[in-house]
Length: 368
Image 1 (cartoon, rainbow, N blue to C red):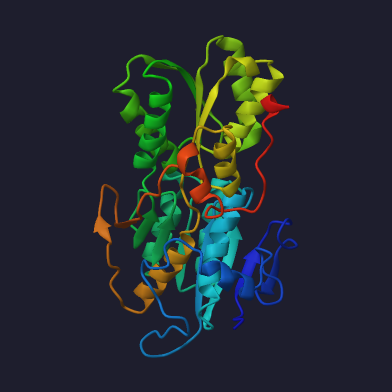
Image 2: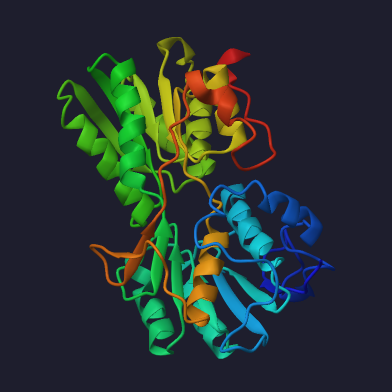
């Protein structure tokens, strides 16, 4: 069954600028509903807030429901995979439409996008924010409008219906423990963080620091904001290599940053240093890189959470309680998803094919 999803996006890589399409004619993700429904069967958390396939009744009436999704950006395949999980859930419900807007990693644009969704009269807003604190006014605008606000992946310190995500702190602790074990409890590391001010970057750093507090002989030589992507990571790592002759490991908040760091190491003729890489993101390419020994550990943080976000919005619109929602140290409620095991050499084969993305890992420039 192909239901028609209203989708709006302003990134040419998916659709022409400012174009609107029905999903069964021109899906933003490049996949039809048949393909997305097949993918739905492989999503990891369909048992959380389960919802039967078919029209969703609000107050006993199967009326049209429009859900707005404001995404951080679509400049990274992790973000596209999140969208696909959202679209897959929407494909199951013929009276549910989506309006999807691209934040372009721009706080001002995303704030305007959220307000645009309100002007369009959406019934609920799903938000994955560029930065945490900067999106507070936009989040307040949604709650002031009296409609559900579901925040995903990156949190906002404002009142919300629900925040959905895995724990970046405990995940980072797992990766940092593996690093400390490999280093024998001593050595020098550099850190390439995610976007400064975003909650995953803050929490992954906190998890690392929790572990390093137990290992005083592991020294952090330098920290830089690699923004989750490859391009900023290369010059940062080049600077680290120039300033420090003895680096044992790189702790990167994202796989893309790790691949950037490897390129910088090769360019600096430092492949012989045996610098190890510890990273996050949970792609199939990353898992293959772990199997090949390019990464020593990959924090298994799934993008496949937006289907839960849509179900949470539909639960609230239907007047249902959200099982598992709890109070926490931010305004609103949280639905904390289970941790996925950190992928290391011993379990890489088990996880290849269960991650996101269908691209191959970047060849290790140190293994030419």
